[in-house]
Amino acid sequence: MTVERSAIRVGMVGYGFMGAAHSQAWRSVGPFFDLGRQPAMVALCGRDQEAVTVAAERMGWHDVETDWKQLVTRDDIDLVDICTPGGSHAEIAIAALEAGKHVFCEKPLSNTLPEAEAMVAAAAKAQERGVRSMVGFNYRRVPALALARRLVADGRLGTIRHVRAVYLQDWITDPEFPLVWRLQRDLAGSGALGDIGSHIVDLAQHVIGDRLTRVSGLTETFIRHRPLSGGASTGLSASGGEGIGEVTVDDAALFLGRFGGGAVASFEATRLATGRKNAMRLEINGSAGSLAFDLESMNELSFYDGTQPADTAGFHRILVTEPTHPYVAAWWPPGHLLGYEHSFTHEVADLLADIAADRDPTPSFADGLQVQQVLTAVERSAAGDGGWEDVGR
Ligand code: SOE
Image 1 (tube, rainbow, N blue to C red):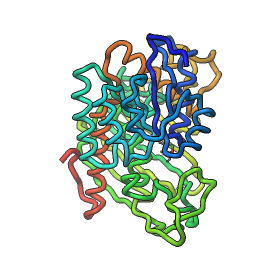
Image 2 (tube, helix red, strand yellow):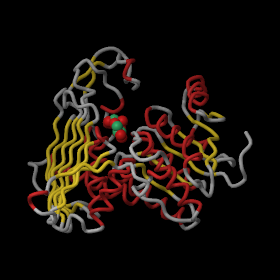
Image 3 (spheres, rainbow, N blue to C red):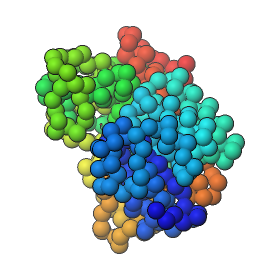
Image 4 (cartoon, rainbow, N blue to C red):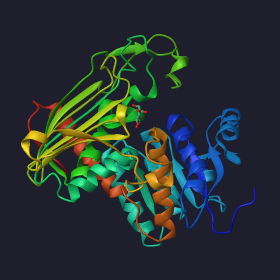
């Protein structure tokens, strides 16, 4: 493999859904973004030699490893991209940082607070040596949501009072869907709360530029036992074996929140919203206007400008495809649309630019820890009588 001297040589661990999305990003970022340092897709790591070899060829990786401990110590790797289930994020990220590798880690940062705290400590120590790290909350880099943040920051909504966020899926509605790793606490850390609730917590805070300080919530597991095997079509490895196993994570989480600046919020994350495939919606109400976003119309942002005369006021649809909109100039002329996968390309474009400029990428591991603190506070509230819990206690 011929690699430019200035290239950032990438090794990725994991090749499931997120591995495929990240591989698409590493392949596509070079031709579309002016990068000081191009990525080189050096090696893909997975436990099964045959399967990871097939995946590497398909996804565009030059070499393979079957032991992540080997990958993170390779001299020809500068950056480790972690696309494994949350239960392995901490050990891989800390080893990579200690080996002097930049780290890009998928959300949620980790499955537990102690792990997240250890990752933040390792990232801070590595940063002293110019080693950078980022956690992958990709929706921040959907152009319409980046525009929403810009409008809020520019004061177009005035004082923010309400945030209303939902993330609705339905892929485990069938009780015969097997007990895959996302339904096992030791591997996934939590269910809908950490998997998709983490997205709307990070996004709400990022778009309004404020942090949650108190939460009150509930979680529910509607289907408490599932078959141990089957579901080959899911693309997710079941725990295997015969019989029935216990679901040890939430199917749904609903919680209220208070932001430090005074806004109030409602959040709902569920994977049993029959008919909703990946419906993430965000609405923000301020003293001077409102914004509404629907992932199923991800190139659009609804904006209500409260400063307009009443007889012409109303939510209008911004088609977020102008070159002045975030990230759009790198792609197509106005009116041509972007997709879910472009948000991952935007992540790696910003990460590579930050590394080339010796800057700290965002969201940082500390940002990922704060989201984990919110999720943990929700779980504390849900484990009790749903009372208010301080974030970060
Ligand atoms: C499954 O819920 C999942 O793949 C999440 O893990 C991703 O973060 C989300 O973007 C799509 O749905």
